Image (cartoon, rainbow, N blue to C red; front, top):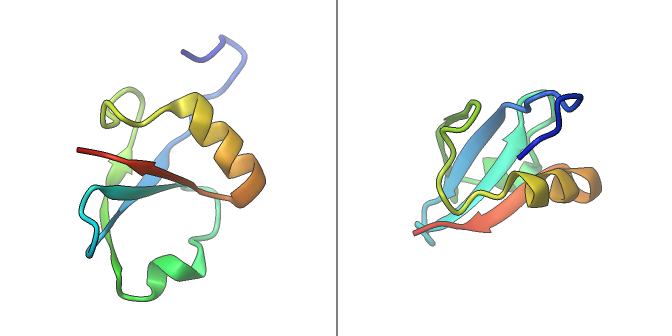
Length: 76
């Protein structure tokens, strides 16, 4: 859960074509990492508010984005 001061982040969600339950979330104000453009990933949807998959952890995403610019996670 986010604090009242923390703005909601909208993510673009990409899904691996080879490993269907591997996802990459990229904040919409960040550049798309080059590996996502290599043809092995497809755009899945935009994550707004609380409509994210159950496996998506926003706190972990914030940390991943801070260090990598994106967040990888395993779905179902």
